[in-house]
Image 1 (cartoon, one colour):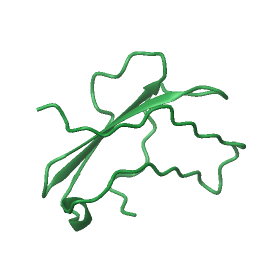
Image 2 (cartoon, helix red, strand yellow; image 1 turned 90 degrees about the vertical axis):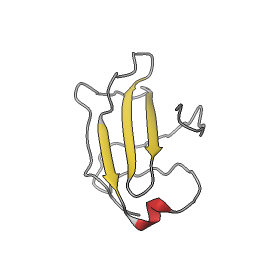
Image 3 (cartoon, one colour; image 1 turned 45 degrees about the vertical axis):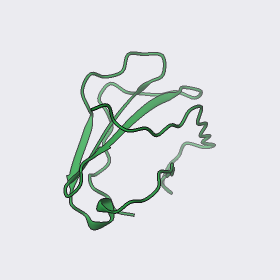
Length: 96
């Protein structure tokens, strides 16, 4: 795994048990590849701008691959239990 940017917590985004979050990723380009992300509380408006953008020419980003979803919970987390429910996961070409 390669980290392109340090962890970011979007301003104004907080959650309580049972809350859902919507996340949008966009990956474009080759050498360099740009990865953009935004997250918002489900049921609220999608942010107009991307909250995190990383551009890199890391070789593994430049080769064909597959798309997946991986979760991570720090060993120092005091929030338990944590449940991840994915209600929709789709991959499609970016609108040009």
